Image (cartoon, rainbow, N blue to C red; front, side):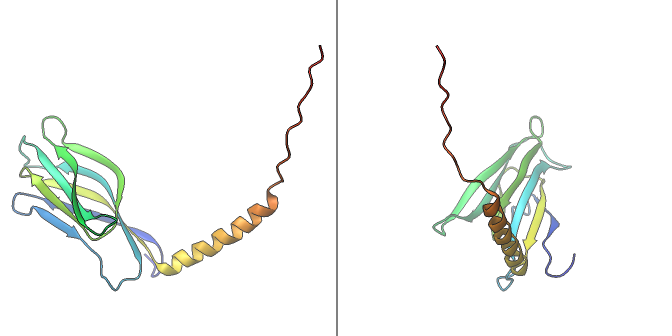
Length: 148
């Protein structure tokens, strides 16, 4: 990956009876935007046939800590759950609220550098000016009279 280029890095962690939580965080001095996109939560080798509840612990819009269950896995009926790139802003903690695992979480750590964002914004401004020139004015439709 080139420096100052947007990119994605594979992410994975495992929750077990001995490691009940994992916190994903980035360096506070990093001026890049970070998003964690979760793809899948699944039971792995050695899992028992019990309910394994995975929670995401983060902050809401009022900066209060909240815990939200995102998966309830059981070996005999639902050993895997697709989260379709469920996006989270770090810092975020994953916690095994029930069960003994092992539960594996996988996804993508997406990084966008501020310099890239400003470059993209400049392109959007240029495109919108071009689009404005191409838009024709709205003219009311003419009603046709029926001949009787």
